[in-house]
Length: 280
Image 1 (cartoon, helix red, strand yellow):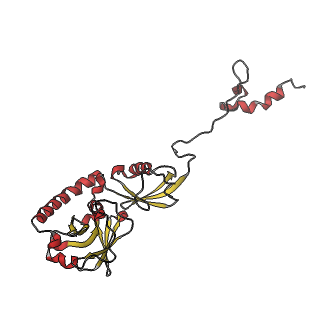
Image 2 (cartoon, one colour):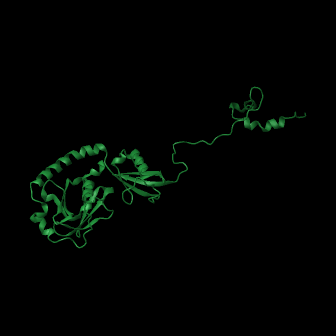
Image 3 (cartoon, rainbow, N blue to C red):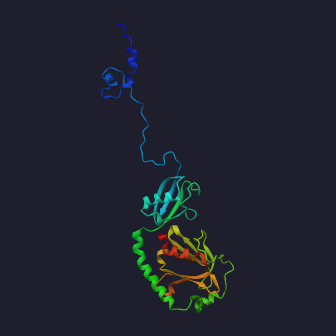
């Protein structure tokens, strides 16, 4: 009835050999009878989490009427975010205008521009197919308008415009910078007159693809796609300011005129309204 030496030690080591089917004690030994120890199990990763161990921020990406909830690395750059948006929307990075407190800088990280959880990232842009479908008739309309303009005397000399221009510059006109092209400011363009001589301001709602034209009486919200062309001309004697019209229909009666637009914003207005920024 005495136990053989070594039996107790062998019994304690049995669980280490378990794992073979049926749980046989032999499963823990090699054919020669030597004990076989299983290597320690490595931790298992599910894979697919490229941001593991990195600080993430939750974003709401809004493009057209689509909304995407995204978790993105806080130390990634604006250029990398554009690549992520491309994977979500199919919109190439070169055709994206990404907005967060202004235009998103590609070279800076989300941490550097102080992006926080729940931040809204607005994306403006059209796919290549959309551009091809819309741009051809719009370009033809622009060429027709330009040909008609060439037949006429300078706009600022025409009687209908002189009655506004002769009032002189508005007291609160925005400063102009001649010979420089700038992006649209984050605040509305103000301190201008419309055709009736009333004060007018322009607000570019890029996230909604709209131009808001505001006066004392009301604010008109125009979809960018409804503007067929933009006409502008320097004001004689004040070449650092322009007079500008947004063509909303087929005839001159549909033009909405704005006077004393600072020259540095003229190209940015045209590019934004007509969608040409997509090719930059």
